[in-house]
Length: 457
Ligand SMILES: Cc1cc2nc3c(=O)[nH]c(=O)nc-3n(C[C@H](O)[C@H](O)[C@H](O)COP(=O)(O)OP(=O)(O)OC[C@H]3O[C@@H](n4cnc5c(N)ncnc54)[C@H](O)[C@@H]3O)c2cc1C
Image (cartoon, rainbow, N blue to C red; front, side, top):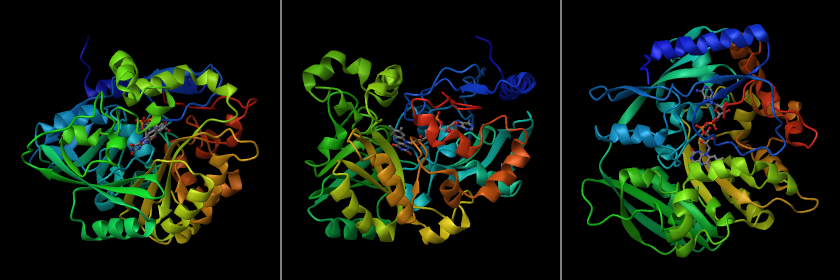
């Protein structure tokens, strides 16, 4: 295999973009790893030009003195963490699935159990190199092209292609000592969780609600030594264990990807997959988030037999409204587990409209992740019900699955003026799809058309 420098890979990308501009066919990007977007059963085949970006997946440098890494966007967090841990360093935020890539984490709003201290993954990124829709290479940071820098986060691949990222790194220890605290009421759970976030006395904080009367706060502290370690990479099921264990030790690498084997708990949608005999037999082939997502994409046409896709989505609820959301969720959704990740954004994000920022009113958010709620009931589209409730509470629904908002409502949440200004600078000819166009509800209907413009897979 020929080795290509980063600049040579970017030149290849630019050539492909220039060709796509000439033939006006639209483009489809292949980043060479699974995409953490819920498959759309109605997405048709397209005639778009296929652009390959999978070579852009390397760690370019680690500066241990300044604690900085420079990476290409297609590197997965599993590979990145493995490499930085050799220097006793880690990214400030490590999304829990091994196949999530750094470019996808910036564009798609990734966060995790360090987010209560440090915000989203992008909040510790210092510079993006972006290839625009005109094939120009643009550097943006808080000092240089700040308006573009701030709009790249949450743009879901609609402004340009992030081709290089400079990020800060955090000192790490080899093990994580976990403590699990179980509560019987939301009030006790919420008081304890809030206190942990205020005191900031643990490195990692998240929670799993197994049932309205079984709410578990999971706390992790990095440590130098461990008397034993538990691994959840094959026969053991992490999310279930949290309701029975009080403490344990994991390697830091295994801690980050503790939800990966089950893809949180999506494995339980496959009959018997949580049983030992089945895991011994087929576990190697089907367990692990990348395997599961590949299977679900292959089976995506079968999903058309379902009335609607299951609900798989993260919603960010202003912390002061969590109890209200939880009451509604318990009555309406009745779907467990619910994953809870506290998230303190360092400032209001530019892509959120001014009026939505006002509705949110605070920067302390709670990510409630609903992974796998069946959605076939006559008369109730739970994905749509959730979307309406989130808006009413001043929250944000991520765009990793179906969007139901009409254009007017959508642009009450997302900042149209700031988005259009960034679009004009980075992609004035609309080679990449517009944000609303990419997620418009009609794509999820039997007669809907495939995405227009770019789709990363
Ligand atoms: C089942 C499931 C579980 C999840 N679990 C977690 C979790 O545990 N923690 C967490 O933080 N998040 C989680 N997520 C959300 C996830 O962080 C986002 O979906 C993230 O965007 C996925 O990144 P990816 O690398 O898979 O990119 P993709 O899914 O391929 O792309 C995501 C978006 O980013 C754009 N994009 C990707 N690369 C680039 C680039 N280089 N330049 C410009 N645009 C680009 C794409 O166009 C797309 O719109 C989950 C999502 C699902 C569906």
